Image (cartoon, rainbow, N blue to C red):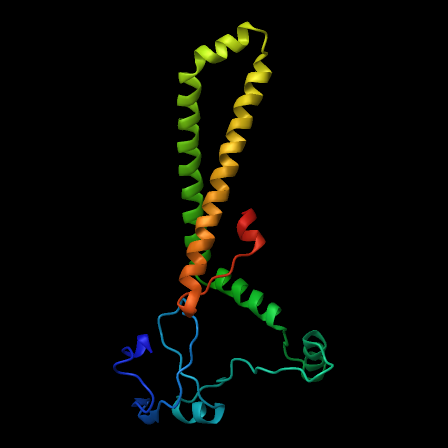
Length: 201
């Protein structure tokens, strides 16, 4: 609705034209925004054929559900065996969509560049912070050295401090990012899904 002019222009009963065919809004669905900047209009397959230009293939996919007693995996296997066409479960179709977007759009490169720059900047700031911390505490390290602490022990102390601070920072960052994603994704405004590869990477 927002991409077609907003609620003040598009509401139940509104009529407009698609390729010189007059259509009327009979329902409005609540869905998540997509990366594409064009609106989606849902209608029957026959009506879509009548209002769109002639093309070789107008059907993207067919949505089907299994009857009671048949699993989605079994249904997908039967469809593939009987038709020779690709059939996927909801999870498989989702990952296939993600893979296609990463391979055929610039989202993966842009996102990866952002993550890489953030990682480099974070490493630089962390390194500078711990360098200043070490320089400021040289007298204390010298005292520990004087009472018998080895160089390896001092190095392990600094590494432990680095790991502790990094873990706390990672936890705070993931928590804030998750909170922001859930808040932005509430009400279907933006799609948000947090998976383990995202947390690990």
